[in-house]
Image 1 (cartoon, rainbow, N blue to C red):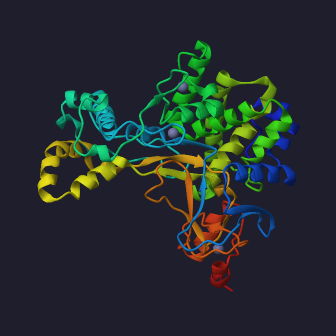
Image 2 (cartoon, rainbow, N blue to C red):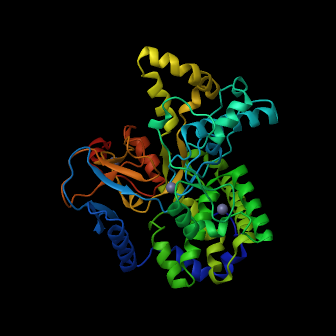
Length: 455
Ligand SMILES: [Zn+2]
Ligand SMILES: [Zn+2]
Ligand SMILES: [Zn+2]
């Protein structure tokens, strides 16, 4: 973390060589083994990793793709729904699929809306800073007026006692509780509950099965993250994921292969966000915030066998990795589909249905269609290199109802050709593109950039 003074973290000094080893690019062979196994186990037959390209690691086509073909459905390694989005959408905490029922989704949202209204007398929502996170942190103010819907109706929607017209065409999986007994995490299936438990949640659960002092420490950590920056919740998942898989330095390194894209240097803030005179101060503030968050996490789950994982250097690198490589996690809302379906009914049917649904839609306000939003890291998507004239892009189709990253071909791609996506808005002028890409640590020399480069 060059340039802003010595680290406040003792572990940074105590374990400097181990940390350096952890943060170094993984040896080619172990990276190769990791990705080969990932591609084999997830049956991603259409792609392969290449290691010797002009940009180092990249993803190539393993077969021909036509325009519009699905190239890859990549399962996230870690991800989380934005804290504020939990008011709007109840989704599986592991795969981010909407759960319960249309009635439950609407009732839950109106219920929380009414609580918010009675607590501070307003429906306005506040957006917490998310400088280090991806950009869609805030879902905006609520325009709904939940007081128009009687509390009994809201309750019976939530409890499943009241059913709305035609929701049988929009079935959602039933809610499965956390095996550790906390109320924060809910799932679409037992297999998602078990996978989440094994991957991260067994160390982060605040349920009754967690030892009381650890539970209190975890609650403090979670509260701090919710109040400052929810990227810390994703960073904690990355640490527990590594911790649960590794009880030795060697394994820790292997697990890290999956998380690190060599060549990314995090600087505690994206350069383009702020004016350079304020930059040092701003970085210092972000680092102090991260350090406090890390202390709270350490109080809860520190493991002396994996001490270097709890250093500020590693925490900072994880946050930086998210900043550069994360994709916004978006899952479209079935509540939106439902109201569109009602609106498209033949006139007489529509009139009948709207007697029931109309007041609910009014109460939800114009944000009725808010999708599940969060941030996630995808191991294979993050290996795809950038081009300003990409041949693929991330795009959710109607059938994609969970948190996977879906990569679609934008043009025909032939076998062995490199698959590229755009990290930025590729329609920006040349200078602005290069400026934004400088944050990723490279100068783009794609065909479009070669043509547009001023001489
Ligand atoms: Zn699920
Ligand atoms: Zn739990
Ligand atoms: Zn370019």
